[in-house]
Amino acid sequence: MIEEQKHMRTVRSFVKRAGRTTESQQKALDDVWPVMGLDVKNGPIVFSEVFGREAPVVLEIGFGMGGSLIEMASHEPEKNYIGIEVHSPGVGSLLSHANAAGLTNIRVYAEDAIDVLAQCIPDNSLDVLQLFFPDPWHKKRHHKRRIVQPDFAQNLRKKLKIGGYFHMATDWENYAEHMMEIMSAADGYTNKMGEGQYSPQPEWRPVTKFQKRGERLGHGMWDLMFEKTE
Image (tube, rainbow, N blue to C red; front, side, top):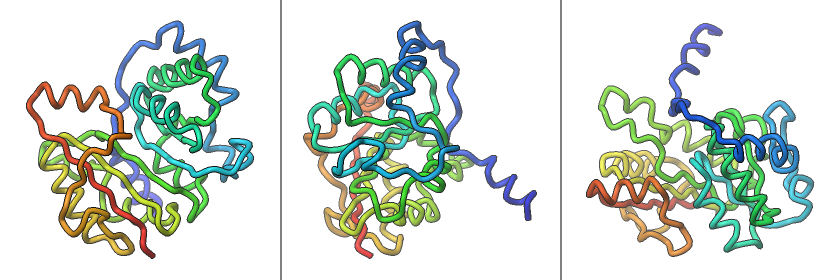
């Protein structure tokens, strides 16, 4: 059983990208991480203690270089934001820009989202979960690596409040269809737009680097929003 579990954990939805951490990013990792960084090894967190206040909590999985998360946290200071990203330059970039902007409503994990959700985020605690432009793993033999799967949907549902919702976005039509199929079949969720319907891009969701790249390639854009109902 242990060997089986070990094998299952090797099928990850992400690959750590190679990339150089700039001086400013490294400085942020050194100086700002002690203020904004969170570690899985510290176990479950209490949001009011982490942020020093009670406020709606938005968690984003895979924020890339952090530009859109910074924009959302700046425009909606009444909300608390938790970002998860495994790419060190991206974490450093977000910390650097958050610090420069004087933001106090962002906290960051630099670890696998599956581990963070399982070990750190209380059940029935999140108002919004965001997953924007995850790796589409577009080759059919790689579809098993897509993060949106039935088990993942239920793991997220445990963390959402009743009425909270899971917001996804992708520029790959096949992945959008995959997400729609998985989430429409998932127990305890309702499509906020109606059965089988995609959402217009909300004005508060910034256009990300990945979205711009997709648009340059002629890709469409699909947003999906599924609310936890039970």
